[in-house]
Structures are given as structure tokens and as C-alpha cells.
Length: 588
Figure: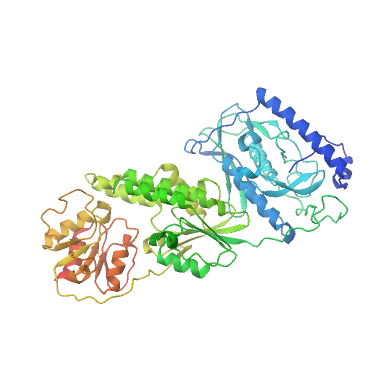
């Protein structure tokens, strides 16, 4: 919203704000705005506020001020598009603010921190207040953010350097309580100076804008002021679409049709379970974003059935770059993990272009989730996550426990993401309304909001099986897949082993265990008494599903995600005695 640079006294305000603007008055208003902007630009070049950097919140654990205001305040159909635009503008602005640290005694400037609200920077059309009317404008709705920051700054005991009240007051609003702070690029600003260092947390929940100012331990505000409580229900403000002044040159004679909310599906690797779910759930008005057209490029891993959508987008360059980087990276270790994460980040930022303001729900692949959250694209939307692996925080915790018990197993310690990325994923998963997965161990971590899909078994084929003391290990041969426990159990029972994956723990890992390599990929199921994977963590139990489809017994840990079912014997991870007992039951 913007206000005229001049202030009118007393009762003159009410008359002025409802006057029908003319082309002449609008031209004069624009000229005054240009003059004020030029004057502010020159002043700021000499002694304006700085743009402050961001930091994590570890050192800022004391909440000094907070404001939470509703996102959706206008229910009329003709205003829905502008409401969606306002929320989109708040997403872009809060992404610029979240994590900013303002040093003690230094000035925070709203516009210096956010920058101009232009379409090139992702801002869209919302409502702003101009000459007494709510009119469409790029960046409209940012006054809700400035109001919230002002309320939090007062609570935190900050010195207010610059603040402007709205020229029009709506009953029940922050302006009616004297707690508002309007802004207009760049000459109507909100500026304050904290008395101790503080960090800004700026987030959108599905229904609220939340601003929190946090200080270091020992910080105390000078005096806390409660958030205003509206004495009366908020009044619906007059806009160009509803004022009835059809003679006004700015009147919206043909207001745009209200946009119905739509879902955007942002996927990564094609799992058959997710393929079936998305195909069943999507509607013609929804949008689909995939890494690459798998059918066109003959890449089964990305061969999604992308038909029947309003719009389809992809990130082919970013996907091919990721594929090359992963192929060049070592088969195990931090370099490979880094290539995977950097590739997912590039794909997420490309596909984020599909998240237009009318997207009220996002169904997103877990690999893309933390990057979209960090960039502020998910707030104010309902989020569902297609989960393919443990949350990074849980994954790290399990590997850390295993590494502490077995520090000699180096591969348990080189499978990590950065703390910032772990925190982003944790926050995004807490925000999500639903997690969708066939993996039973993952679903168990989200009681009340997990949608558990059935695993898709491959096409069953008959295999000729004979009594055998040979077992199969899906691999690869690394500690997190349970290779050490299986090696010990195989030695104890004198079993022969068919190892299907690469030996990433180093040559000679299996030592004196008798090894057999299948002559053809299709014949190994008939060679074994069971398929065994005593994994600490496992994302894709596809070989185990293949065994189940063929009627071959499976011995696995709960971490493999199959759950209790016929044909599956579950054993605890890294429990060699339990594994030996399970193996005896199938090998005799």
C-alpha cells in the first residue's frame, strides 16, 4: 500500500480518501511521488541504512518481539486474485528478511532490506492504497509485513527512527489501534534501531504471517507492548472492483475472474508408487513439474506420465548436469552426496517458476523440499511431500549412533548434509500437512499426517528353486546397508553369498566368505534360499520387492521399510545373533 506524501489534517482525510480521482490528480500525485523518491534516493546515498546479512539462529534464542497476523482477510470472489497476489508478495519479501541480523545501534531499513518490489524479482499484482482507493499494483499488500515488523519492534524495545501511519483508517485494523506502519518505495519507509543485536525471523504459515525478533541470551526488551486486539470486526475496505464509481478512469469495469486454487506437482525420480498416486489425484487445472522428459530422452528413471495438466515444466539442463556430476563423483562419500544435493537445488530453483500465486497446494519431492523452503516458496500454501528417504536429521542421528558404536567403519561417517540444509528440511516437514510414502519406517515418524502407499511389486515370474545354503545381498557393500553384520553371520553359518552390488568398503571385504556371481542378471533368484538386507538405513528396497514377487523369502530390518508381511522376517539392525537365527530358519 502507498499513501500520499502530504498529510491532511482532521476531517479532511475522510473527504479526500473517498474523492473520485481524476487523470489530472493522478498525474500530480505521480509527479510528487517521483520528487519524493528522488529526494530519498539522494539522502540515502549520503547517509542511508545498510543492507544487513543473514546468519543462523543459534546465538539468538530469546524472543523479544512477535507478531502473527492472518493471511486471508478478504473472501469476496472478485478479490481472490489480489489476495493470492498479496500472499505471493509476502513470500518474496519474507524470504529476503528471514535470518537478517541487525547489529546493536544500527538502523534497519525496510526497503533497503527487501529492495524494490518489481516483477523481475518475483513480485506480482496485489492491492495498494493510493489516493484513498485500493488499486491493483505490483507488490501490493506489503504493508501487512511492515505493520507486523513495527509491532514486533515496539515489543522488542527498539528505537523507531521512521514510521508513517496510513492516511486511511479501517475499523479493526492496526491503523485503528495506532500500531500501523505504511510503506511506499522508497520514500515512505519503516526504520528502527535495536538496542542489542537481533535476528529477524519472517515466515508464512498456511494461514498467518509470523514475524519474530530474537536476541542473544541476556537480551531484554525495554518494555513489552501487547499486540492490539480489534475492538470491532474488521471492515471490508473499498476497492476499485467494488466501489461502484463506474465513471472513474481507473474503475475495473471487467474485474478478472477469481482464480481457483490449484495443485502444483514437483517431482524428481519416478517411483511407481508415486506415479500411480499423482496420476490418480491430479486434476486438469493442475500443474506438473518434472526434472526432464524421461520418455523423450529415454530415461526410465524420469519417465513420468505427464499428461492431462494445465501446464507442464521441466529442468532438462539442470537434470543432465546433475547426472553428469553424479557419474563423475566417487561411488561413495561426501563428494557424491554433494553432487546430488547441488543438482537437486538447481532443479528446485528452475521448477519454482511453476509456483504461480494461484498455486494453493504443492505436492513436492523430498529431494527438492529444503531448497524451496529456504527460498520462501512454500509458505501460505498447503504442502504434501513425496518421501523417499528418512528425514536428514533422523538419517544423521542413526548413522551417528552406528558410527559411535563402530568408529572403524569409515563409511558411516561420510554421508552428511550441512546443518543449514538439515534445519530447512526439518522446518519444512514440520510445516507440511501430509507426507506420502510407501516406506513404513518413514511413515512411522509422522503419526497423524502420513499417507502410506502400497509398495508396487514387479511383475511376478516363476523361478525354479531348490534347497540351498546360498543367500543374496542386494548391496552395495557398505556399512549402512548391513554388510558387516551379514559377513559375520555368513561366516558363523558357513553360508555362500551372492553379492549383487559393488564392494564399496574396499577389495577383499568379504574375506573367506564363499562368493558366487550370477551368470545372468535374471537367474540369481533361483540360486538363493533368501534375500538378506540387515540395513541401518535403506531408501529403495526394490531388490527385496523383486524377491517377494518371486516368492523368495526376505530377511530385512524395519529400516528397509517393508513392514511386517508374509514372506518377510524382520530383525533389528546390527544384531548378529538375531540375524543368525533368521538365517537358520531359511537355510536349515
